[in-house]
Length: 247
Ligand code: MG
Image 1 (cartoon, helix red, strand yellow):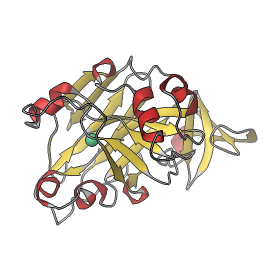
Image 2 (cartoon, rainbow, N blue to C red; image 1 turned 90 degrees about the horizontal axis):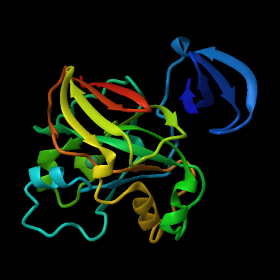
Image 3 (cartoon, rainbow, N blue to C red; image 1 turned 30 degrees about the vertical axis):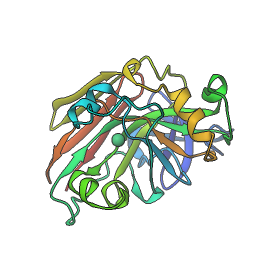
């Protein structure tokens, strides 16, 4: 099933090209129907926080020059605020504080029910669905600022969508990122160092994940620079494509 959030926060599920409105993210039908083409899709989550994994694909660790270090024994975690969400297709302004804006295509997970100290074997039972995310990063400020707040958590630095796919094996799909139609990132999610269940269990061991929270699972190799006018597409097989113009 594909769960959609649309028109300033209404929920529904998509069947063909028709949205069947529901009273909650995976709730009961209200009886109202909408044509997909007639609505404005929203980022499919209303999180209290967005929790992200920094280094989860070996090839990306290599390209960032971190191979002198040992492979991470635990997932490297950082946060993006809810202010970073941008809707599918929503233009993201190139901020004036950076000279090096990067794209990072990622598989995102949206939580369905509260997670505290959840074992890895039960972690995926708490997942509402999976979607595409663009972890926009001010790479220059990531290197020079004391923390990553400005580099990772500026307004609209987390486009998300276009909808949640509820049935997906998160370790058996392919992620691709295109910039202006040119393929820049391609990886199978079986290449993750820490699988999604491990990431969720790990986070829940020190931080409560609430319903609606979003978890970004890391980017593969091929990250690169964005310029105003660029059009980014994050495409995940079995989910769909998230389009983001940089303006
Ligand atoms: Mg990232």
